Image 1 (tube, one colour):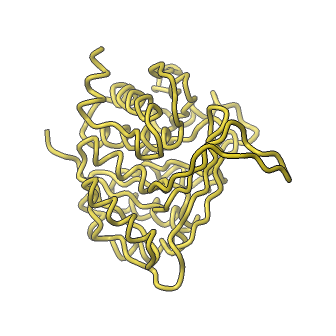
Image 2 (cartoon, one colour; image 1 turned 45 degrees about the vertical axis):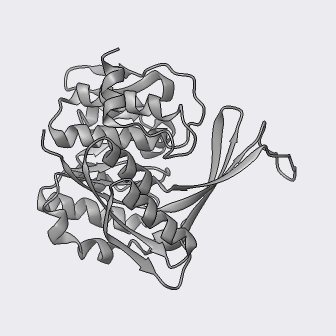
Image 3 (tube, one colour; image 1 turned 120 degrees about the horizontal axis):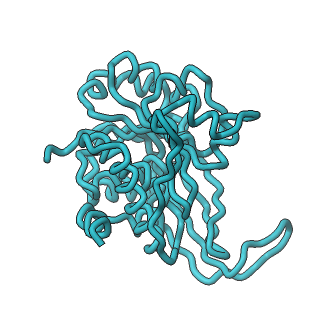
Length: 296
C-alpha cells in the first residue's frame, strides 16, 4: 500500500507532566508523586502518531531557539516525521504544556510560545507543498486566523482538510463548510453548535462531523442514520494524547482510501492502545499493534 502524504499544521511543545493522587484546589498545595518532561503539542502528537501508523508525515510549525526546541526537533526525527517546514523563532520560547495527571484524568495549561508564530502567511508560503499532499490536518493551538486561512487554502487547492477543533473555541460557519472532516469531542461540539441539538448538527453534516465520546466511541450521521462506532475497552494509564492518536489514525486511514467506518474503527483501536502508555506520545501505537488489535 502506498504511504499517504500528510501535512500536519499545528503546535509543538514540551509537556511538563506531574503525577499526583489528586489535583489541588484553588490556593491548595498537594504533594506530587513524579515529574517528567516529554514532547507534546497537539500538532506534534498527531504528526508522530500518523508517522508511527505508516504515513509519510511533514510537520508545519515553529519552535524556539532553545533546549526544548532542539529536543522537539530531535523527537520528530527519531519518529520519522519530516521537519523541512519547522522553522525556529529567535525571540520567543518553545511552547510548553503543564499537565497534572490525577484521579484517572488530566488537567492541562498550555503556553503557546513559538506556536503563535504559525501564522496565515507562514502557511501560505507552503502552498506549493500543501498542494502535493493527500491530506492536511490542523488543530487549534495555533492562531484562529491560521485555521481560517488553511481551510480556505485547502478548499482552493482541492486538498482534504481534517480539523480537530481543540482546544475548544467557536469556528466561523464558512470554515465548517470548507473542511472535509471535523472531529470535536462532546464538549467541543457543544461549543461549536450552541443552542442546537447535536443529533441535528450531525444530520446537517453527514460523513463530515464526527463527535468523539471517550470510552463510548465516535458518533456520526452516515447520510441515512446516526451511527456509533464503539471504542475498545482498556484500563487507562494516561489519557493524554488519546484524542490526538484518534485523529492521526483516522486521517491516516482516510488518506489511504480506507472506508469511513473502517477508518473510525481503526482510529478507535489506536486511541484505546494509546492510553495504556505514559505521556502524550509514549503510548502511541505502531501500525502492527493497531492491526493486531483489530483482528482479536
